[in-house]
Length: 108
Image (tube, rainbow, N blue to C red; front, top):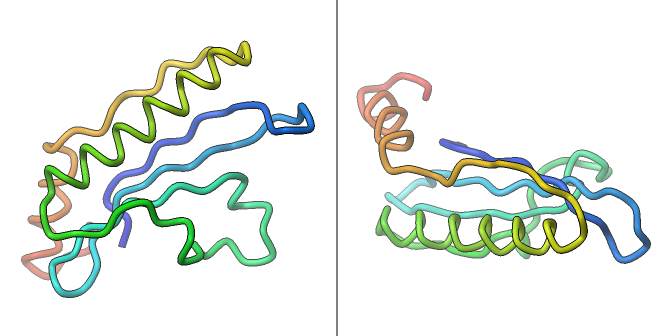
């Protein structure tokens, strides 16, 4: 279940525009996971693959750090390619609200 997601753009190896998705999700067993995929909507099935995940662990702070590091790195590379976007970093507050809703049996 995805709790937060960011989308940005960059240039692929062939010069085509890529859509980069980075997300934070909550998994059974109180596990946080951070995923990163390029052009996920263009795949045969848009479900994340195991190699799309860059972090799995129990600490929310560690998930935030992994997600924000990936986002910052991708933004820096995109800027170097001439693609300038302002994309907000992930914040703890935006994850705590859906976590609370999920905890009490509601969809985030």
